[in-house]
Length: 267
Image 1 (cartoon, rainbow, N blue to C red):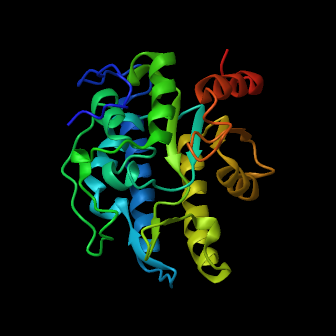
Image 2 (image 1 turned 90 degrees about the vertical axis):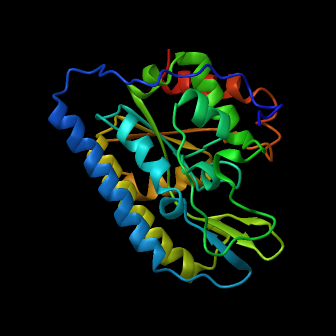
Image 3 (image 1 turned 60 degrees about the vertical axis):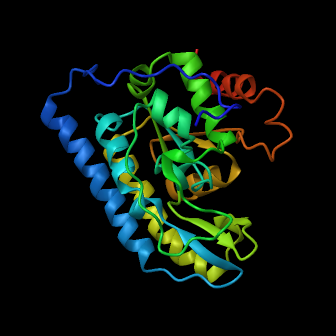
């Protein structure tokens, strides 16, 4: 079913051609290293326990692994000058599709990825996983991928120099069905979770060798600053596209573009 509020994102071609001069062996090594890092992260967070008010945990790197692996295999094929870093999966984005900021229409029609999605063993009745059949739009992802589609045209052009990742792979839901963000977890739970996520981010930076890490929102920026400060990578930040942010509801794409130009990342 087509989401009536989703933007008309041009469909990306199904065949991805190499745009960099790197030997195929290096592309395979980059992909394989990122896939291994994601699997290591999934194993680490699968051992963690969370207490009420969190009652349901969603781990897309587990039940939506087929789509996430397809994303890494297709687009994480070389070092990237710029990494965009989000916080954690949204209920109608990565929770459904396994892709960061993974609004269904953007993932299917622009990224050209569609895969069978399994289901978490314990789902909240108000937050069911229906995968690519999800009819609700993840507005943050709609805005983020919509900006990239408008600026770069094809997904291949965007991913030539960029990649989008999340800091934390888990989504947390309270008994009411309300989303709980990682920063609102108790200190003891945050400590164990952040240790695994920090290591994954270090691995991603080591593998992709970016010049810039651009945090999407304050939480991602604070985590990146704590982990990567003092290194060679440059840190930037753009406004999070969440509709919960009044500023983001005032032409987020224009504001984010201005921020990226002021950083010197985009012309």
